[in-house]
Image 1: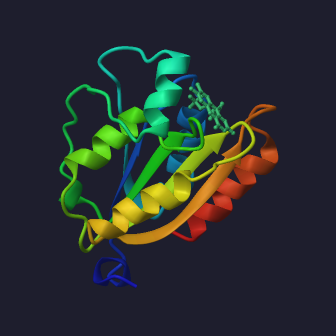
Image 2: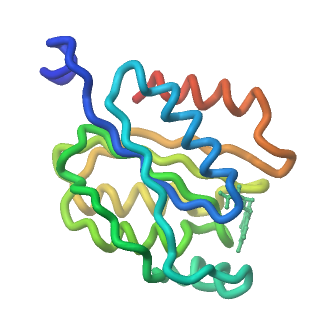
Length: 167
Ligand SMILES: Cc1cc2nc3c(=O)[nH]c(=O)nc-3n(C[C@H](O)[C@H](O)[C@H](O)COP(=O)(O)O)c2cc1C
């Protein structure tokens, strides 16, 4: 347990996500609610400068490419916990999240977790992000995959609650 928590102070958490059609946004909103009691949580949405088309987006994701995003006013070293949220595109993280990962050089001392939403399979997404986090010296604290093909069901929200308790 961190010294902050043992003194009864809340840790600081950053929930940073991209969402094209709102599903990842909903899941990250639910995670914020679940974490609010134990963390001071900031929920930040990454916005690409230009809307990304389906086919171009899919092929960029597969190649691990980034897009330009609106300026992010966050200092990653301010947080004890960082949770990235991304949809799965072509089995991979999305270009806006690749852009964010490219902005970060050092995650040492930070616990970093991941939430992905996908229709049916997360493919390589979790491994790709986990590897990037570790290469920046962050502690990869776990991942949650939410399948959204039939909407976000109550069971998925229960999984979010359970995941929050591991963070
Ligand atoms: C370009 C593109 C590629 C996708 N590729 C996959 C995929 O490989 N596997 C999968 O299960 N879902 C895939 N999906 C579905 C999304 O991951 C899923 O609907 C996700 O929950 C959408 O999140 P959002 O509403 O936050 O944008 C893809 C969607 C798009 C737009």
